[in-house]
Image (cartoon, rainbow, N blue to C red; front, side, top):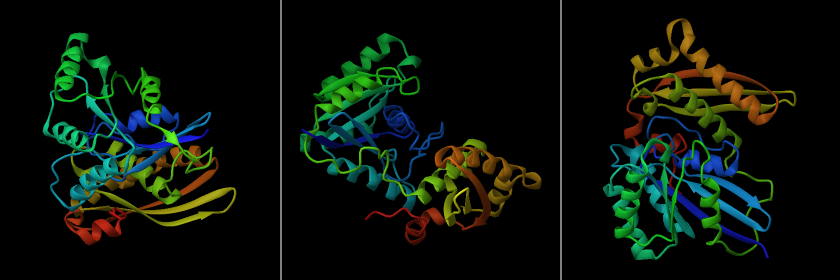
Length: 294
């Protein structure tokens, strides 16, 4: 009998939610970065084994929003929990309970949604610290399971999957057996380009960028892509482009390598940088750039 279930992966920014989902899937469907608030949209990762199909919802980090984009991200994370059959709360194994985790626990208490507490980055802390964290959370709420992991190293990730399998229900699958994500190609391209901006540009500038795909043409042996990178200040544009265009060229090189691996063919990537001042504060612009709460 086929089984399936929607499982929301939630938590603070930069705790490793996307890394966990990528590790489970064995494929990179969500971008990752050492910078917080990397994920902006809800990204669906689909993992099918035997008769079971897991649909993971990788969500933006829950934080105190400072602009319209932040409000969209928090609303996306919260709505994902209400739509899920189970919740995986990912935490940094050595950090104390914050208001973010308190709010998630309050939701779990109200809804009685099945849940797993995943303590990530265990390779960075002593066993005593991890044990203290588990004890602190167990006093707050009776999670269905506590799983210490290192998502980056793949340690104990299979245990997370085993625990989540208990929450699946008998149903026809929602996706084909070979599907790994519901993301459109254009969205995946935009996210890959944005990841490379996060990788190459320092400080807060990457958080003020958005990538819009203006052209995507599959010519068989070649895919032609034109992407526009929007930033908030003329000075930011100069930093992204770099001296003699070196910065933009590096972003393009890194992105093209990933895109050719993704599509299995040659990619011509044409990048442009434009300024849209304070776009994160505008609900309309945030929506136009693809961040929509449907």
